[in-house]
Image (cartoon, rainbow, N blue to C red; front, side):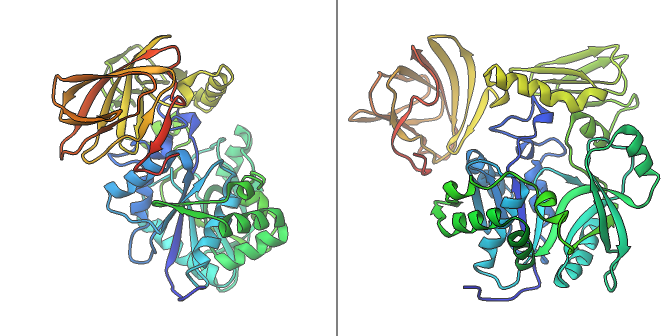
Length: 477
């Protein structure tokens, strides 16, 4: 039962997206919000820090189950302990996510005011942001469901827009919503820029949990019922709260705008100019970042000549450009994107082609993060694969076996503790061992230093689903 009443804002951070328009940097298993693209911090870390002042309660994070360990590590790295990390098996858009978060927070807090924010946006004027939240909190106490409208700076066709209507009495800078407009044409976007009634739709919401849930129950009862059941039957799984996916996955995938905001009389908008970007494309990132004297954004090992108004980013190898203008060039270990800045919104079509062809490049990088550390694929052929595996201090892989592949481990840094069948022994640098098919095994790092090994896999099938786990420190099945 709820136990206390508090003036705090209760942050809910939505971290379930894949950010496909920032491919090849953003992948399904390591999406935009978990990348450092604006600073040395990830976008998720920037978001959490932005709402970690005294006026905020501990954040609740809603994320995809596949991202749970990276999200937890992101928070641990900035010394933030979340209220909860709630796991979605499948993303169902913002309305169900907001509902389950509201229901969970209401279990412990009476009449909480929720701040719902995406995890992958950039806000450069945090003073203006907090000022808008103070106004929004006041409106939410009076029963409004508030969204922040961003003052447009250019005729953007990739954003949705909000048209404000009449001012709301006794509420500072707060307006009724006249209409929501989907991504407009260039002509319409230019018209909106010149009309002070139109704002970009930020996707940031402030509301009393009870008010939002009442409106959701009224306009989208199927979502409310399934979310209530999914929370009621949820279970704790180590550091995570796992929803009852049978109910949650039965929710329609729908945004708050469609499910509630376009139907309720409680919706309102507060305009704000806070130097906001959803970083939804490479062109948006180019606009956001500092540029050299030729209008270029260069990141990584990059050299250019006679190049202007372009973004070039390398995640490893030397990247060079000559005579380029208005281009996006992004190079990772396994893929390179080259496109005109004017076509940056179309990157998603390439991702869709990769999905249709069942290629792996949209899913993960050659470096894959795990709760125990990470591995990098150096070479893969039909019957062998070479990986470099890094185990963090104190980490260990699950006790497991493979039905279709054997493994050869060579320690190149640190000391490994190896379980192989009934044997248990240590390997030091330049020592190795062989794990035959069907033998239970485990790799551990009991030291306070990094452990790095080279793993050579051999067999007819080398995919990650050839793992039978018997024991796992991180609760994986």
